[in-house]
Amino acid sequence: MIQFENVSKRYADTGEEALSHVSFHLLPGEMAFILGESGSGKTTLLRLLLKELTAEEGTIRINGQDISRIKRGEIPAYRRRIGYVFQDFRLLRNADVYENVAIARRIAGAKERDIRVQVTMALRMVGLEQDYYRPVTELSGGEQQKVCIARAIVSNPCCILADEPTGNLDPRQAREIMLLFERIHDHGVTTLIATHDRQAIRDMDYRHLYLSQGRLQSGE
Image (cartoon, rainbow, N blue to C red; front, side, top):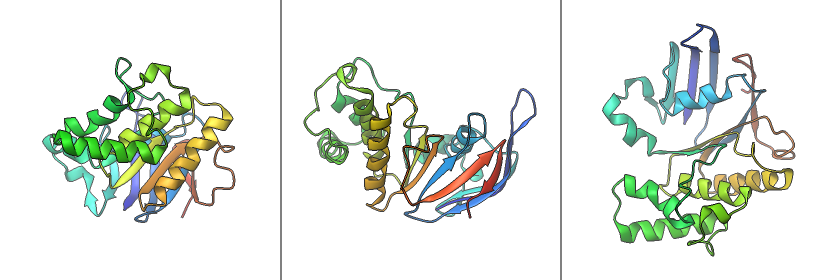
């Protein structure tokens, strides 16, 4: 599903390596965590998968497709196949829960009747089916992150990427969010989560990929 082969990426301003010769393979339906301190290269790795950055060396494949061959005009459609969850939520602050999830399908040009069904299913999955019309500004941090996860899964993505999704949450909320990712993964969704929050993933028996100064220490 996700394959890195000898991937390296340098910072444009300094030339310093953000990732150095990283190789790993995530199987379809697998869940894994990328662990490492701030600056270890976790976000860079995810941004490469999202086609926000381009590697100087190596090959990245998703579903067997070499993503370096995706043309600029094809990138929006490619990104719609990936569910992405941000640390800082990136919600529409003047909109309600429903609209924050529906926006992903509207951008894709889906019909309103289909959007209603898809948003309902996504909000039910994250436990917010009673909160359609609540302003997101009234939600707790954990609830806002659930809205972000609903937005990520509403398009039935081939995989979910999450960048420090518990970084702004307290320990109880963080643990709840990680268990929610696990429930979504149980439906067969390939899931890759970058985190430094080892407490939130305690007892979660999935593969750990350890990054240190841009180098993968273990994980195969």
